[in-house]
Amino acid sequence: MNTLAYRIAVAIKKADPDRTHSIEVMQYSLGILLNTGLIVATSLLIGWSTGELASTLLVLIGLGSLRMASGGTHFKSVWACNIVSVLLCAGIPHVPVYPETLLFLINLTNLTVMITFAPRPDANVAIPAKMYPLLKWISIGLVGSNFIIGSHVIGLAFLVQSLTVIPWRKGGTL
Image (cartoon, rainbow, N blue to C red; front, side):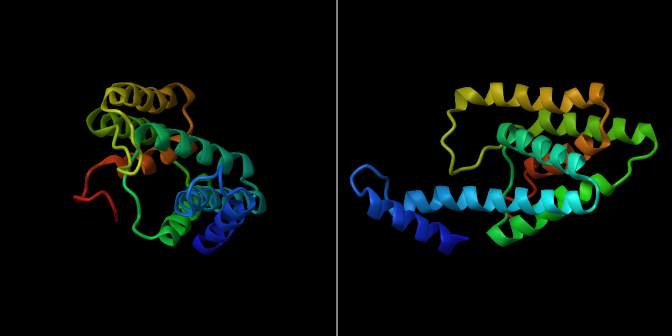
Protein backbone atom coordinates (compact mmCIF):
# COMPACT_ATOMS: atom_id res chain seq x y z
CA MET A 1 0.00 0.00 0.00
CA ASN A 2 2.84 2.34 0.81
CA THR A 3 4.31 1.87 -2.67
CA LEU A 4 0.93 2.51 -4.29
CA ALA A 5 0.42 5.61 -2.13
CA TYR A 6 3.86 6.84 -3.18
CA ARG A 7 3.15 6.30 -6.88
CA ILE A 8 -0.16 8.13 -6.64
CA ALA A 9 1.47 11.00 -4.74
CA VAL A 10 4.20 11.33 -7.36
CA ALA A 11 1.60 11.36 -10.14
CA ILE A 12 -0.41 14.06 -8.36
CA LYS A 13 2.73 16.13 -7.78
CA LYS A 14 3.71 15.85 -11.46
CA ALA A 15 0.22 16.87 -12.55
CA ASP A 16 0.23 20.05 -10.43
CA PRO A 17 3.58 20.72 -8.72
CA ASP A 18 2.75 24.22 -7.53
CA ARG A 19 -0.59 23.63 -5.81
CA THR A 20 0.05 20.31 -4.08
CA HIS A 21 1.64 19.32 -0.80
CA SER A 22 4.93 17.47 -0.61
CA ILE A 23 5.05 13.90 -1.85
CA GLU A 24 5.66 12.69 1.71
CA VAL A 25 2.55 14.43 3.08
CA MET A 26 0.39 13.16 0.23
CA GLN A 27 1.84 9.64 0.55
CA TYR A 28 1.03 9.57 4.27
CA SER A 29 -2.56 10.73 3.69
CA LEU A 30 -3.10 8.42 0.73
CA GLY A 31 -1.68 5.52 2.74
CA ILE A 32 -4.30 6.08 5.43
CA LEU A 33 -7.08 6.28 2.84
CA LEU A 34 -5.91 3.18 0.95
CA ASN A 35 -5.49 1.09 4.09
CA THR A 36 -8.89 2.16 5.41
CA GLY A 37 -10.44 1.36 2.05
CA LEU A 38 -8.79 -2.07 2.06
CA ILE A 39 -10.12 -2.84 5.55
CA VAL A 40 -13.64 -1.66 4.72
CA ALA A 41 -13.83 -3.42 1.34
CA THR A 42 -12.39 -6.71 2.60
CA SER A 43 -14.56 -6.72 5.72
CA LEU A 44 -17.71 -5.97 3.73
CA LEU A 45 -16.85 -8.67 1.18
CA ILE A 46 -16.45 -11.21 3.96
CA GLY A 47 -19.64 -9.97 5.64
CA TRP A 48 -21.54 -10.31 2.37
CA SER A 49 -20.17 -13.80 1.72
CA THR A 50 -21.14 -14.99 5.22
CA GLY A 51 -24.57 -13.38 5.21
CA GLU A 52 -23.61 -10.77 7.81
CA LEU A 53 -23.20 -7.71 5.60
CA ALA A 54 -25.43 -5.42 7.69
CA SER A 55 -23.79 -6.47 10.97
CA THR A 56 -20.32 -6.04 9.48
CA LEU A 57 -21.26 -2.55 8.32
CA LEU A 58 -22.54 -1.82 11.83
CA VAL A 59 -19.20 -2.93 13.30
CA LEU A 60 -17.27 -0.73 10.86
CA ILE A 61 -19.42 2.32 11.62
CA GLY A 62 -19.44 1.75 15.39
CA LEU A 63 -15.75 0.98 15.68
CA GLY A 64 -14.74 3.82 13.35
CA SER A 65 -16.95 6.38 15.07
CA LEU A 66 -15.70 5.54 18.54
CA ARG A 67 -12.11 5.39 17.29
CA MET A 68 -12.36 8.91 15.86
CA ALA A 69 -13.60 10.27 19.19
CA SER A 70 -11.58 8.20 21.66
CA GLY A 71 -8.29 7.61 19.85
CA GLY A 72 -6.28 4.61 20.98
CA THR A 73 -3.21 2.46 20.49
CA HIS A 74 -1.87 1.64 17.04
CA PHE A 75 0.01 -1.35 15.73
CA LYS A 76 3.59 -0.72 14.65
CA SER A 77 2.89 -2.49 11.37
CA VAL A 78 0.24 -1.34 8.90
CA TRP A 79 -0.26 -4.94 7.77
CA ALA A 80 -0.85 -6.09 11.36
CA CYS A 81 -3.46 -3.35 11.68
CA ASN A 82 -5.11 -4.36 8.40
CA ILE A 83 -5.24 -8.07 9.23
CA VAL A 84 -6.46 -7.63 12.81
CA SER A 85 -9.01 -5.00 11.76
CA VAL A 86 -10.47 -7.22 9.04
CA LEU A 87 -10.56 -10.26 11.33
CA LEU A 88 -12.35 -8.27 14.04
CA CYS A 89 -14.77 -6.41 11.76
CA ALA A 90 -15.72 -9.57 9.88
CA GLY A 91 -15.61 -11.80 12.97
CA ILE A 92 -17.58 -9.79 15.55
CA PRO A 93 -20.96 -10.32 13.82
CA HIS A 94 -20.51 -14.07 14.32
CA VAL A 95 -19.89 -13.88 18.08
CA PRO A 96 -23.04 -14.45 20.13
CA VAL A 97 -23.48 -12.68 23.45
CA TYR A 98 -25.63 -14.66 25.89
CA PRO A 99 -27.13 -14.07 28.37
CA GLU A 100 -28.36 -10.47 28.19
CA THR A 101 -26.54 -9.66 31.43
CA LEU A 102 -23.27 -10.25 29.59
CA LEU A 103 -24.10 -7.45 27.14
CA PHE A 104 -24.86 -5.18 30.09
CA LEU A 105 -21.44 -5.99 31.59
CA ILE A 106 -19.74 -5.36 28.24
CA ASN A 107 -21.49 -1.98 27.94
CA LEU A 108 -20.58 -1.13 31.54
CA THR A 109 -16.94 -2.04 30.88
CA ASN A 110 -16.90 0.14 27.76
CA LEU A 111 -18.41 3.05 29.67
CA THR A 112 -15.93 2.69 32.54
CA VAL A 113 -12.97 2.61 30.15
CA MET A 114 -14.17 5.70 28.26
CA ILE A 115 -14.78 7.63 31.49
CA THR A 116 -11.35 6.65 32.80
CA PHE A 117 -9.08 6.80 29.76
CA ALA A 118 -10.69 8.57 26.79
CA PRO A 119 -9.61 10.35 24.79
CA ARG A 120 -6.22 8.99 23.86
CA PRO A 121 -5.50 10.76 20.57
CA ASP A 122 -2.85 9.73 18.10
CA ALA A 123 0.38 11.68 18.56
CA ASN A 124 0.41 12.40 14.81
CA VAL A 125 -2.91 14.23 15.01
CA ALA A 126 -2.77 17.76 16.36
CA ILE A 127 -5.89 17.90 18.52
CA PRO A 128 -5.91 20.84 20.92
CA ALA A 129 -6.17 19.83 24.57
CA LYS A 130 -9.25 22.04 24.94
CA MET A 131 -11.09 19.53 22.68
CA TYR A 132 -10.40 16.57 24.99
CA PRO A 133 -13.47 17.07 27.21
CA LEU A 134 -15.72 17.15 24.14
CA LEU A 135 -14.09 14.00 22.75
CA LYS A 136 -14.54 12.29 26.12
CA TRP A 137 -18.25 13.19 26.18
CA ILE A 138 -18.73 12.00 22.60
CA SER A 139 -17.02 8.71 23.51
CA ILE A 140 -19.18 8.32 26.62
CA GLY A 141 -22.30 9.15 24.63
CA LEU A 142 -21.49 6.60 21.94
CA VAL A 143 -20.87 3.72 24.34
CA GLY A 144 -23.77 4.81 26.55
CA SER A 145 -26.14 4.67 23.59
CA ASN A 146 -25.75 0.91 23.45
CA PHE A 147 -27.52 0.58 26.81
CA ILE A 148 -30.58 1.76 24.85
CA ILE A 149 -29.84 0.12 21.49
CA GLY A 150 -28.88 -3.21 23.08
CA SER A 151 -26.81 -4.50 20.15
CA HIS A 152 -24.28 -7.22 20.92
CA VAL A 153 -22.47 -6.34 17.68
CA ILE A 154 -22.07 -2.70 18.70
CA GLY A 155 -21.16 -3.73 22.26
CA LEU A 156 -18.39 -6.01 21.07
CA ALA A 157 -17.12 -3.44 18.53
CA PHE A 158 -16.99 -0.84 21.30
CA LEU A 159 -15.23 -3.33 23.59
CA VAL A 160 -12.49 -3.89 21.02
CA GLN A 161 -12.05 -0.14 20.65
CA SER A 162 -12.19 0.43 24.41
CA LEU A 163 -9.29 -1.95 24.90
CA THR A 164 -7.13 0.20 22.60
CA VAL A 165 -7.72 3.27 24.78
CA ILE A 166 -6.26 1.66 27.92
CA PRO A 167 -2.56 2.58 28.24
CA TRP A 168 -1.23 -0.98 28.49
CA ARG A 169 2.30 0.06 27.51
CA LYS A 170 4.19 3.30 27.16
CA GLY A 171 4.58 4.59 23.62
CA GLY A 172 1.10 3.82 22.35
CA THR A 173 1.96 1.03 19.87
CA LEU A 174 1.67 -2.73 19.92
